[in-house]
Image (cartoon, rainbow, N blue to C red; front, side, top):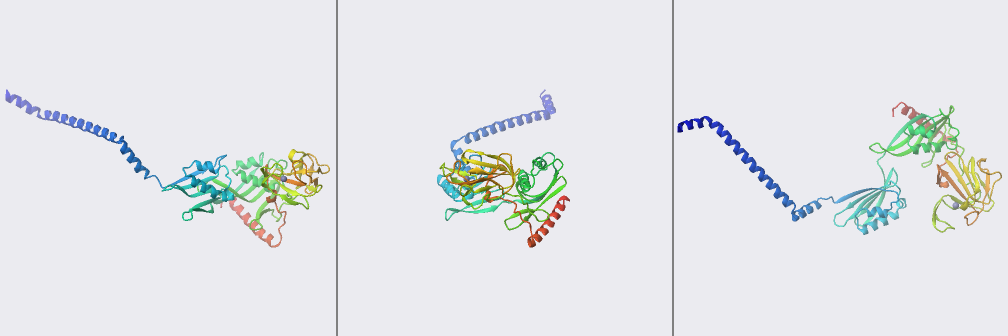
Length: 432
Ligand SMILES: [Zn+2]
């Protein structure tokens, strides 16, 4: 019997071993699992330990960068104080910054969308070591801290922009503006184009469907190709009912540029900077304390002191759109010269003969006489120039010179003209 059982066991030996092994494996796995869970539990427990937490925090704080950089885009209503308040800085640093900025006229006032950049050193005492304020789309002003003098030195730097020349042409459908926008020309360039032709062409009356234009202009772009700023117009042509009005950019002087037709003639029709004879400029355009109201206000025109009764001339050809009493301005006149320019004349003692709303006037025609009507302390002419709806400084007006180029300058212009014509054909052929 015993041997029989042994025989059977021997027969099933492999099978028994197998079952035994399975049990061992299951047991080991189970033991390993529980052990691991226990380890995780203990680890978690130690993480919750407040001392360890603190230790980790200190390690981390040691790893935060020494320098931090802040890029700020100016919003409407922002001033330096509220920008500084949004950054973690000691008050002595804020004061130092404000003092530095106040000294620089060009950055005293902030403009919407302007970029301001700070680099702050957080080692020991937190301090600004560098800041940069955008001056224009092409320039920045950088202030660097001189650690030994504890002062900022500044320099104006050019941004990294590439000049690209563009050629566009189009047939005007309903308006020049809409057609140009459809071609991808930026508004600033279109406004400049209208300004160039402003004295020759009335864009509301003279342009007809089917008229066409060509334009070569500069555009400044940054590295990723998104537009930054419009540059100068190099060449333009406006074809009205078959007639070409070509304009070539030409540098008269280092800083003076003007536009001339193919015969070297600049536009004759223009505006006068001083529409009065024998007067003295008594108050310039800009911020000033109002002589009667007492508070500081923007003076949106230029004042010319002259005796009562001195004749005032129309600054350019145009249509009178106002000749009446207008409150603080006393007796005043407004003239529309073209779709870009308007002029205003205020404090008149009386209007010129026949001057009333709707009347056409010629440049130099007498439209009124100097007086002291309205809010005025003495006889003077208050003269305003409005360009595209904005009051601008008449004394800094960029106007056609009215010149016809002669001699050496003419020769230079001819060479320049040929260069532009070659450039144009290259741009048309897509070679440039
Ligand atoms: Zn004035």
